[in-house]
Image (cartoon, rainbow, N blue to C red):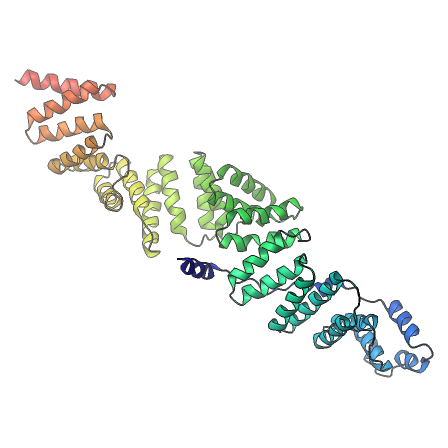
Length: 452
């Protein structure tokens, strides 16, 4: 069972974008020309020829070189090889600036070999080296460097994040999730990165953690409406509709964008829960117009809203669209059949109503009042015997009892079974919970008595 669960998670695992945060590129300083010259004078005091060679280089392309290329040519012209940690560090920074990652790897290894300070900074050097290995697509080496970094400093948040990315790209979802959890629980985690992991945990159905991720980005002031949409989606799945709607209100106050119709669809669901069916229908239509991936799912909600609003013609149209689409998706059509049937019935289109309600009952016998509705359809089409059976089921289940007694009595009268009709009419009058039907039943009883 556990293996099946793990396999299921692997299938659901989304491929994490292979955009690696290269910490070395943003955390190591880029040397200014002034600093470079000062460093060179300190190390190469008296080597004026080399320095002059740099300043008087004859290559016409030199003046158009980038600053880092000039620094690199300067160091190469001097011809020195780094020996101390400080020298390796400078060479590494210049190589990184030039995107010469092979050289950067060599110099960072030199930094590690010559460093004599505390473990925390040594761990950071391994992290930088891992980042360079990632850029060189040396994933095994990168993973090994990250392990060494975490051995030295288990609180190094960025190492967990990069290790999680590597595991995700290798299809090891279990390790990736473990690393990402450690990252978001770290004191040094970046709220923006944490927020980006919300979709990972959402895909794993861990909506609670996903909400925490999205909230981290929102609380940090990240002005991204998609964070509100993501949190709303998770809250809807958790049944927190009020909170979800609050997030969607913020979302639509920030942007009019409706990617693939998802925010509009979610708002429609929230409004349905509040009984605001007309507004919900408007959002569902917007969702379809904005390209919702499976419009059949939206149509299945629209038919309910339109029925509630008395828009029976559109309810039938969208109900049929929902049924056709759900069948293509291999999904259950019972609800769509039920509401489409009721929409036909509300227009006194009994044949269509009976066809859809019958399909609904075949899929689910527990729809409220469905036997009564089927009986009404059959009575209207003068199939009295079958209608009697439907009304009898309705009475047995305690649904629409008074109406079922009255309508069954009508069927009995049509079949010439006056005694059974009289018994049903008396039962309906005895209940007395529907004044209009009670009055009609009494009138029929009086008429039958007068005929005797």
